[in-house]
Amino acid sequence: MSDDIFIHRQLLNSGSPVGLDPWALIAAAVESILVTDTNLESPGPMVLFVNPAFGSMTGWNKDEIIGRSPRVLQGQNTDLSIFIGLKEQLRKGEVWEGQAVNYRKDGSEFVMEWSIAPILNPDRKIINYVAVQRDVTARVEAERALQKSQEAVITGLEQRKAIRETFGRFVPKEIADQALADSGSLEPDLREATILFSDIQGFSSLAETMSPKAVIELLNNYFGVITKLIEAQSGIIHQFQGDGVLATFNLPLENPNHATDAVVAAIAIRERLSAHTFAGGVQLNTRFGINTGTVVAGTVGGDGRIGYTVHGDTVNLAARIEQENKRLGTDILVAEATVLEIGEAISFRPVETTSIRGRRKPVTLYTI
Image 1: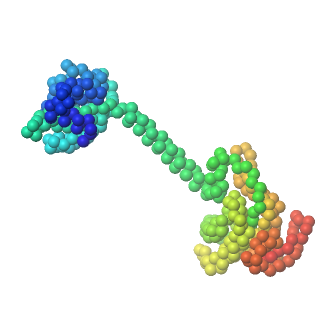
Image 2: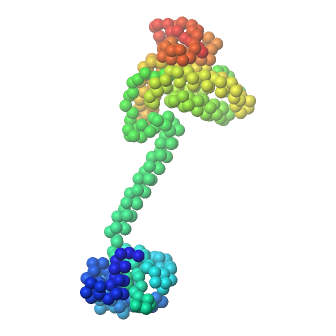
C-alpha cells in the first residue's frame, strides 16, 4: 500500500487524530484525490468528492465531475486490460494500483498512475473508495526516450557487430576491429615481425584433374584446417593467394614469441596434413618459407578501394625462401634471422647458404 493511501485511509477512518478536518486535509493535498461510492458495476462508480488538484490535472472541476463515473477519463488509447482483477481486489479490501493513458476534459492525453483503496467504517465495512492520482506523463516519456536511446545503441552495436563479422571474413578480425574504429584508415605500422609463406606442393597439377567447383571446395577445406593452426599460435592471415597463404606473427597483435610461434605453426600444419585426407581421398603437403625482420603494414589502394597488407624486404625474402623448398627437397625453410631470434627453443640444421633472387648477399637457410 502506498504511503499516500495509508495516510488518507487513516484520516478518513479515525476522524481527526490531529484535531483537523480530514476532508480539509485531503482537499489541500497536492496530488489529485477523488472519492467514489462502492458501485463497481458499469456505469459506476459515482464520484462523490474531488480535491482541487484533480481539477488542475484533468480539467474537470468539482461541479462537473461529481455524480459522474471516473471512467469519463478513459478513451480510445486507454488500455482496459489493466483493470482486470480490480473489482475483486477492491471488494476484498485490498489496494489496487495501475497506470494507463487517460484523457483530460479537453481531450488531450496524459499518463495517469493511481492507487485505489477502500474506506472502512468502524465495523470494517467498505463504505467508499478513495483514489490518489498522479500525472506521470513526463516520467513515462523520459523512460520511453531512454528506452529508444538504449535500443538505438543496441541496434548500432548489432549492426557494428554484423559489419565486423562480415568484414572479418575478408580481413583478419583484429584488422577489421581496428579499421572500424579508425573509420577504415589504418596508419602504417612499422615493427619487427615473423612472416610465414605457405604453398601446396604440386597443386597446379592436381587442379588440372579437378573441376573448378571441386578446386574451390578443396581449397576452402584446406584453408579451414591451416587457419585454425596458424591462429592457435597467434598468427594473422593477411592473404590467400591462389593456394598460398601469407601470415604474420607479431603484427598487428603483439607477440614476443613470434618467431617460435611461426615455426611451431608450420610444424603443426605439416603434422596435421600428414594424417588428414580431404574429400575424394586427396592428401596435401605444404611448403613453408619463414623469415623475421622489420616490416610495414597498412592500407593501400585508391579511388575508394583499399586493402590491408604487409610490405618490406622481410616479406619478399620469406616468399623467395618458400620457393627454394622445391629445389632443395624440403618442406620448411627458415631464414637465419628467425633461427637467431628463436635461439635453442627449436633445433635447426643448416641446409645451404645460397643466393636469393633480388638480394645481393647470400642467405643461409635452415630446416627443422
